[in-house]
Length: 124
Image (tube, rainbow, N blue to C red; front, side, top):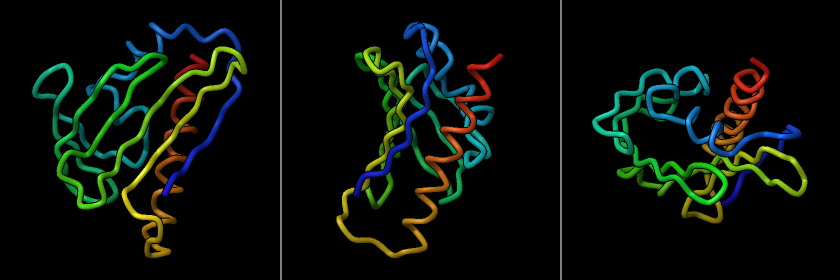
């Protein structure tokens, strides 16, 4: 399943976006993440709305991809910037095509929390 949300943000600098998206900053960028403890630049542990997970962070072409390494649903999300349309995109996936409605709703909330948090962070 895929979930996404776009926010218009003209002129966003991709290197600034990548620098903002550190494991240390996750709790200030997404209300669904309670704690984030980096063990390196690209690995750490988080506690979020679904519990405790090992996290992997990878810089990709126009942003950052995160994966909950030990998640039974292979949940991963990206925060990227579409330079042509000037939109910040929050995209989340799991490895199932059908899922419990409560879990699906929690993923929608997670994506929404990311979208809202990024909008606030980029206005500063």
